[in-house]
Image (cartoon, rainbow, N blue to C red):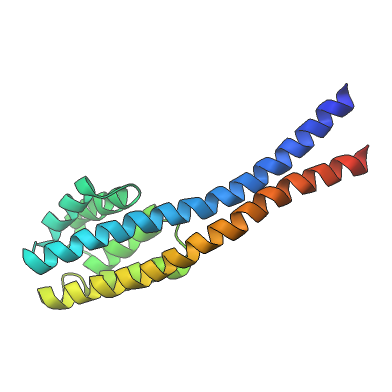
Length: 170
């Protein structure tokens, strides 16, 4: 009876590790979709209304999906320190604190965008947002392909490794 329980726990634990790895890939896809959607909103606002940065962050906090809404909320809260620190620094801190599901190259694209916002005219800012959105859209396509192939592999590998270890121990 204890052997059966041990085998079930071993297979279940290894399977759970595989599912966790696949879940990480899924969270990256969801985070990229949320950020891309928020950047589309920001691009429209900058194109048609030339919305000031504080209003833009407040609107994105309300309208964007999570984790992008949390990210822009953090940016908005950081504007209190705008005189002491640059917008690029506040933007970078918010990226590091809230968008940890993104790959490092995705976060770097966003950090570069933060260096442009608030420094240039509306057209320059809109172009920077459009460029970042394009880069992240390409990253999303790769992340979706990764999730589809590696996600299934991680799940199957976790279950297979657990079953293999169970057979070895019996």
